[in-house]
Length: 371
Image 1 (tube, rainbow, N blue to C red):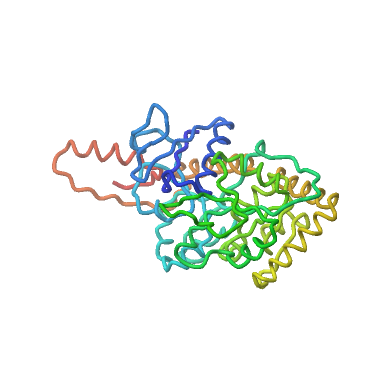
Image 2 (cartoon, helix red, strand yellow):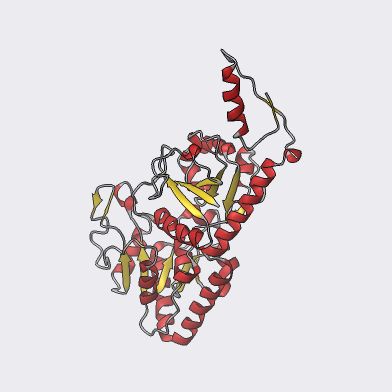
């Protein structure tokens, strides 16, 4: 299939962009082609169609994730899919619930959680969405190691620090005092620099290639896969959980239903109502236990990685995503399954206009039209 991705982040080096790199790798390995388009709908991939408007290219479908921004751009001639990877809590917290109503412009959906969120809030039925999240390719995985001096790994952009209190600021400050924490993150984001200033544990940037972060997690041995409150409220996870499992590390997670479902007791959990000071103490207790019990820690890391490789790799998700999207396209093409007849009323100045209108109508996926 020829697939287009709508990229709202440009050149920003964030989790979404790293996921895109991994997804391009997986889709191409599975025989698909992935084109990237900019905010105006023009192809920016290095290919023969670079600079072409997406409606003028024969793509099977296009998709985006983590934003309602795409819903504000009219691309009626392209089958569009929304990958719901960012909990609705992010939208509600910014008083933009009405933006969810724009989601009815999408033809299909993919997600790993909140499958009924749009129906619940704005009466949009997503049908049977594909199981599709921000995971990692199976062959990026790094084998677990038997380690006796594991350290804590944490990575983040930390842009919140410039606007408000940083996420997990107290927790990370307490762990920073122990000398057993490794923090990674970009040195500059949107012109803001020194976002990790004052942290002795800051180790600098990690090459933005989709793979090196897994090697760094593996070397540290224990990953703090902590989610935002919005993720936990939605029982969702960020990239870090997938990366930690793929990296063969011992995982410390929030008390999260998604993690419980897929990883069970191969992961350490922090209670949600725990203060950050108490959480720091609990994390150090876990780290001590892990280093005192290297065989059991190694077994946990192996079991977590097996769970990832069996059900949560980006390969598995991408296969389901393309397969189910293809089925959704077939369903939309079948006029027998289209219960509503849509009246299209056009005003024309000359007979030649009618041919133009017919050409446009034939481009539409929904064909139960009365012109």
